[in-house]
Each structure stands twice: as C-alpha cells, then as structure tokens.
Length: 246
Image: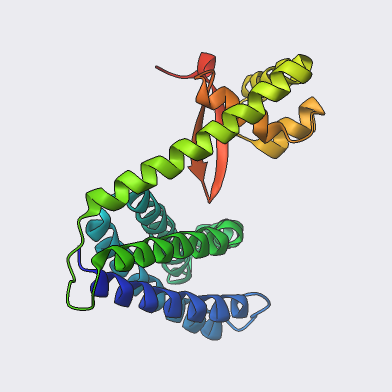
C-alpha cells in the first residue's frame, strides 16, 4: 500500500467531486436541450474519471477491512452515478416517442439518487482520509512509503470492539429499564417487512414503534444476532433474521 499514491488519488477525487457538485445543479431548470446535453456530458467526463480513481483506490485498500469497505462504498456510488448519467445520455440520443416518455423517469431517478450520493461520497472520502492519516502516522518517516496494513487493522478492531461494547451497554440498559420498547422496536421492524420493505432505516422503525432512539435498540439487536445490519448510502438499515433468505 503506497500512502502517497492514495493521498494523491483522494485529493483528486475530492477536487473532482467538488467540481461535479458545482455543475450538477445546472441540470435543473435547463430547458435548452443542447445545453442540457452539454452539461450532462461534462458531468459524465468527471464521473468517468472518478470511477477510475475509486476503482484504483479500492484495489489499494484490499486487506484493510474497514478502509476496503469504505472504498467499496465509494466505488459503488460512483458506478451508480455513471450508470444513471449514461442512461440519460442514451435516451437523449434518441428521438422516438418511447425514449421521450422514459426521459422524465430517468431524470427523476438520477435526481433521487443524487440526494444520497453527495453525502455518501463525502462520508467515504472523509473516512478514507482519516485512514490515510493513520497510515502516515504508522509509516514513521517521510522515506518509508510502504505500511503494514495489519497493524492498522488490529487497531481498528480494538476501536470497533470498544464501540460495540458501548452499544451493547446502552441496549442492556434499555432492555432492563424499558423492556417493552425492545419488543415494540422488534415488532415494528417485522411490520415493515410484512409490508414488503426488507431493509428498514432506523427512523422508519422509530416512527412506527413510537420508541425514541430506536437505533440504539436496533444496534443491540444486531449485536446479539436478532437482526442483520448493512450500510446503504452511508446509513445503516436493518432486517430481522426471521426474514432472512438464508
């Protein structure tokens, strides 16, 4: 793992993302078709380079679980954005009636994805930048470029265990003080599943259950294996294990 290469890629990605976010709002309200296509092509050029850089970054981070996951999330979002832009460009290149009907839907999908895209990308870049700071600290000198990822990973595991212990302590307190809240949260999660939503955000569980800070309970349930958790768009989502396909 070459720290200087990673820093350079991160710096370039941050610069490109700022340029992308500055240009993206120009799509809204643009009624001139040629100008719209011109803006979209400019975004596509930026998006293509961002995807290439995030792919290279992902390969560099293989072996460091946390950093690898962040790089994977970054790559996933960049790939999705490039796909959405190319979908629009493809439809704009056609003149048939069917393409015109699909154009509005494709633009809506792009706009909807962009709402979570900016946050997710900035979060991933921020987390990766912190990882690089740790790598530099472990490097122990300007002339040492190669860093043993295993050391940083062990430190990461310790921090993760500490965070999980704190989450478990909060859950056990809620379970002891208000056991009914735990039942309500679990039932609300099941209720969402029965409505067809397989992965549920904490705020939706909180809204349905009426339990404040439901995420604390969901985190605890995830730690003891009652529910599953994954990250989506920079936010945790949950699924009850009784609804797992396994």
